[in-house]
Amino acid sequence: MLSPPSSQPFAPLPNSSVSPICLPVLKKHDHDSHFAIYNNKNFSNYGTDRAGGADSFKNYSDGDNIPVDSFRRYGRDAAGHDESFSSYAPDSNVVDQSFNTYGAGATGGAGEFKGYNVEVNNPNVRFVSYSDNANGKGQKFSTYTENANAGPGQAFTSYGKNGNGAPNEFSGYGTSSNVVGSDFTNYGETANGANDTFKSYGVDGNVPQNNFINYGDGGNAGVDSFAAYREKSNVGDDSFQSYAKNSNAEKANFANYGKSFNEGTDKFSGYGKGALGQQIGFKIYGVNTTFKDYANKKAVTFASYTNASPTDASVKVTSDSVAKNNKWIEPGKFFRESMLKKGSSMPMPDIRDKMPKRSFLPRSIISKLPFSTSKIDQLKEIFHASDNSSMERIILDALEECERAPSPGETKRCVSSAEDMIDFATSVLGRNVAVRTTDNVNGSKKNIMIGSIKGINGGKVTKSVSCHQSLYPSLLYYCHSVPKVRVYEADLLDPNSKAKINHGVAICHLDTSSWSPTHGAFLALGSGPGRIEVCHWIFENDMTWTIAEA
Image 1 (cartoon, rainbow, N blue to C red):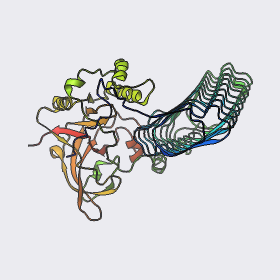
Image 2 (cartoon, rainbow, N blue to C red):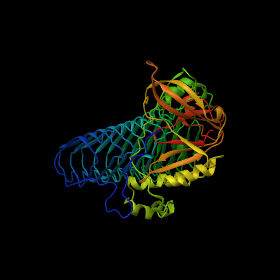
Image 3 (cartoon, helix red, strand yellow):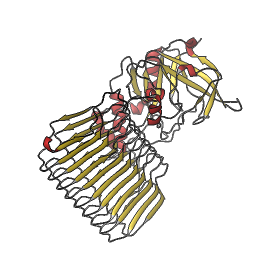
Image 4 (cartoon, rainbow, N blue to C red):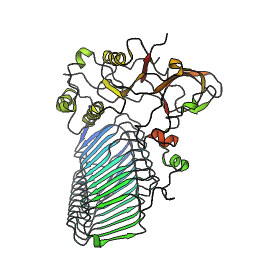
């Protein structure tokens, strides 16, 4: 059995005077700096009124767990000053970055984001009032959130507001990412001569989700270009609402947009509303697109516009295209029941527990704490979470998942004490229960061989309660019971020496009919809801409860 989770707390207990995230703040930084191997810093009044020079950030928060970086009033009123962000927060977990009033009022100079948040998990990046009132200051995003996994992604609000002649380029943005979204709201608002280019944006991704609302609102003579946008992605959803609203002489070109392996959705509502002299061109545009309340239809041209059926060769899904398009799915994360045979080999995913070290609070304490989205203000005070902070988002995400209605046939409960977990397991299974988990993490990210194998309850369909960790200030588990599962225990061997290296527990879900068609299991195994069973290992510090065997 795995050792119990560490007692090191992730956040202070109630009434503690220590903030859960105590970060140093650098104020009034007024000289060129080159940051390498730098972790978890907040910048306030950085580079204000700078003339010329450059700052560079490299290997910033590399491989960190829950890095929280905040830039506030960065480069305000600077002239000809450059910033470069390279290898920023790569390989990090639950990334939280915020840029507030970045480059406001700046003249000239350029900023580049390269290798930003590559291979991170759950990115949450916010750009607010970025380059407002700037004159001729360009920004370039290259290899941004590449190979990232899940999370709200990026939010751009009032980016380049009242700017003049400011070019912004997005290249290699969100490439090969998994379910990462971006929100662009009031981007380039009332700007003059804006030039925004989206190139290789969301390419090869899985279910990218992007929302453009009031983008270029009130702009003058702006140019927006979308090329190779969401190309070769799987599904994906984009929404364009009141894009270029009230603009003058705005130009937008969509070339090779949304050529996905599998159909996604694009919604255009109130696009160009109130605009004058707008020019829109669609060339080699993807399938399944709806245009509603589209303004200035006479100014819109459609060239080589694709409106093919899902069986068209350009979007047909094959096993090769699924494998290529979804390389983010870790080998061995999902597998078929037929692979659980003595002597068979398979890749083992990374089963290590990557959550921060926390402990259960005693039930006598946790029972007195609120646990509801309606009580978020109280919880923020208890856990010292400021507005719009990563801690607030962590708390809300956990509460929303716990409050979500159960799936068909599912019985679920979030438990925040050991006593609550036992009570839930026994309420489903009765008092004669056994808990199982994988012994250790040996074999992670390597090939393993299946040794002796045993089916719980004789290999028959059985009841079980699985408990998975949720990210929360104190230790929290999401426990649930789903119908029609089989549970197995197996010795895991080194495929070369045949020596036993681990003892694993696997659960096979026989009824997948209620799963999403875009669930990673189907993308990895090449099928769909209700058509196959799906198995997975029990990871470190997760567990499954079953009726104890005689």
